[in-house]
Length: 463
Image (cartoon, rainbow, N blue to C red; front, side, top):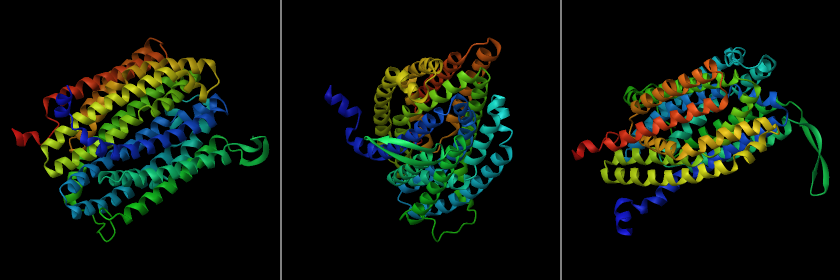
């Protein structure tokens, strides 16, 4: 048995995979920890405050994921150039990424700010919460240029195997966010610590303070990632022309556009999904918002491994190493399933305790725990989809994930949720059941695609 396993899985790849994955996992863990702290702090202000912050979160996903999708195009191109040893091409690509940051940063500053008063209404936010939700939305989108830089430049650093720099910057940014939350959300108060009392100053801004803290932290992160890219020995755009380079932009956009359409389409689906949930009442909105926050921590192993899969697949393709590509696919999928089984089990066990961190409302805790335990069972299946999609991104094949995700989102999740919540009058549990059905469909589609071998461009050479 040991011989068979050794021949099938290259255990020597473990150090390389984890060297790329663990910094991304830690970075995402810190981001999730900040989300937890934000949600807990805002949650202490009441259910309306939680709803004000969470009601427009899916619009944030829509915009952020669209920018991330553009970064995937640069990731694929740079990873392949780096794997082929062509550092000059990688550096040229970095200069074009600067143009992408400027374009997306300016565009996604103007649009959200001009529409901030309308977004809560479109999201069917309760009238009592709309004004506060609009103010929160406006503030967090003010620093969109540095946010775009953080997303795209961070992706480029990961494409050449530098996952530690974005991690370090992310940790500093999150610590700043937490510190500012304490100072801006609450009023000046007396705090007891180890039998000593002291006065902690505070602005008492509530939800607005949480938004200001996030905006400042985003700005610091964008500046720091930009500085790190400029100093990088391989992909620094320093000295490169900032004029559009068609030879670089065309292949990058060929990969990025399907991914952008996928993320825009699925994120728009999240918006529709959340709007239908918001229409079912304040309790459902709060439970959904908190459950989403809790669930995000348990996807960290999956998305950390996806980053490693995309980078290593692109490197292997650039080097023309067919065997390494096969070994990577087998090994990283096995690891992903094992990690997601563990994370899903923990989520199932600790769902009520995790919900209780963010809300004292018994109905919110009960409802959120139910949907979290439902989704926990499906996590290993979704993890397989995440890895296969990551490898497809690394080799530049983003059309297939686009088609699969749009079919799943709009054909299963949105239609199903509309029927359940708007026509039949069911609640949050039915909506999350539709979400899980969407994830299981992705698992089936991606596994079939993987088994057919069409995901790997190097299989053509073998044939």
